[in-house]
Amino acid sequence: MKAVLWPRYGSPDVLNVADIDMPVPNDNEILIKTHAATVTAGDCELRRFQIAGWIWLPVRFMVGIRRPKPKALGQEVAGEVIITGTNVKDFKSGDKIFSETGLSLGAYAEYTLLSNKRVMAHKPSSLSYEQVATIPTGGINALHFVRKSNIKKNDKVLINGAGGSIGTYAIQLAKMHGAEITAIDSGEKLEMLKRLGAKEVIDFQKEDFTQKGLKWDVIIDVVGIKSYSKTIKCLTKGGRLILGNPDLGGMLRGLITSKNTSKRVISQLASYKKEDLDYLKKLIEDGKILVEIDKRYPLDQLADAHYYVDAGKKKGNVIIDVGNCREN
View 1 (cartoon, rainbow, N blue to C red):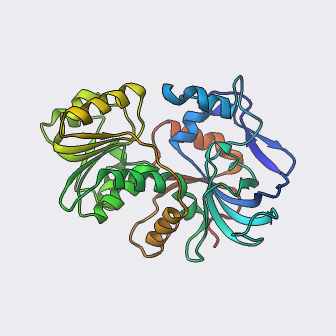
View 2: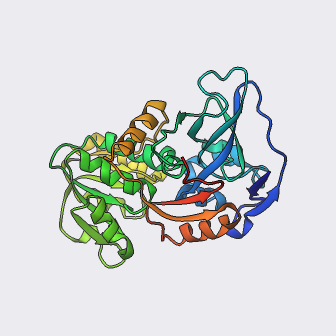
């Protein structure tokens, strides 16, 4: 089968299409024919290994010390079950599913091997493979951040880095809670952010939200590039700051802020639950939230997709069409 491997850490040029043996599932694994995968900012950070210091060492041990382990990247996948191990009870051959792969990775290949410990769900017939492939990372993280924000009706919510896979979900989920949303990203994404539900938009290349003299009840910082001290001053009394991409310094300062002031800082990472996958797919099925698809690339153009995401141009989601991903 064809897979895109990364024999070393670095730029998208390290991604190479290779012919490798098809994996054989053990009793606790599922082999799926891959139809769709995604390229997230997290995939690109892992490829070049630009990882937050507090998780650098454990992630390096899992992915590869001197060089990446010989497997494909890719943390979101949707496809059709081919073979199941004898201990797999919830899925059978022919089922159409979507799943996270975690640091087991492997989605950038014609076939993906999944442990039955991975969190996966059945794909509805009304949704395409590419739609459900965006749920396990973008959808789950956005849902986690919005829930942790404890958003109430009429809360003023600012989302920094709103134009990516997490942000486009977060805008819509926050809107469902009755929030008034300010969305921040680059200028070419602002019309999309308004269409998804943002009341106000800010081009970070032209304006600094910390200098506007405004305050928000909730700030969801997906990208984590603004000064912590300036950001915390933009919260109302009792406001909540979600550090979506925290470093150790921000986490420690957040603990102090939460202990000594009325403001709360949250840096807890998302966990995966099947009921959350099912909840999000139902929202999409019912038309309550939209899946924003920017570009689609075939598997052999994965490096181009990574260059595009690295450049910060992605509007919502970038899909890797491994095999007829738009078919049901």
